[in-house]
Amino acid sequence: MSKRQTDLTIYILLALLKEPLKGYDISKKVTRISEGEVKTLNASPYAKLKKMLEQELIEVTEEVNENRRIIYYGITEKGRHTIYEELNKLEVLISRIKKNTEGYE
Image (cartoon, rainbow, N blue to C red; front, side, top):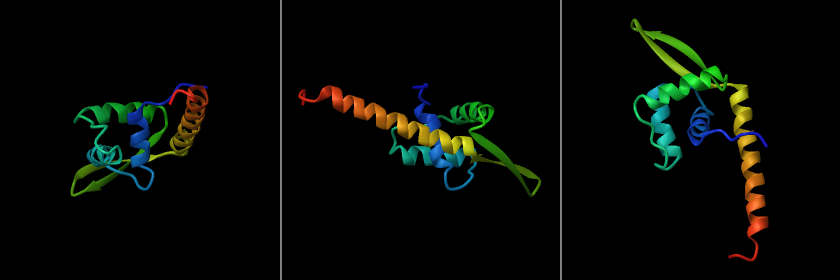
């Protein structure tokens, strides 16, 4: 079993499933999706986004609006695949926990 992704990585990928978003909007959506459990700091999502770009989990598109550059982050196919890999890993882990804790409830 390969290493699990961090919760923040998965929440960012989930936030981007439906549409590309700006960094600030990703932070807000991650907090909402995680029901407040994961709160990103102002600079932290950008460091994480940079790492995720290097891993090719997300991609960038740019838009120029009134001489202002707007950066949107979108999920890649590799990013989508990563979400489903994580789901499978968690299902295996849950199954093993249940199997090994029977009778301890």
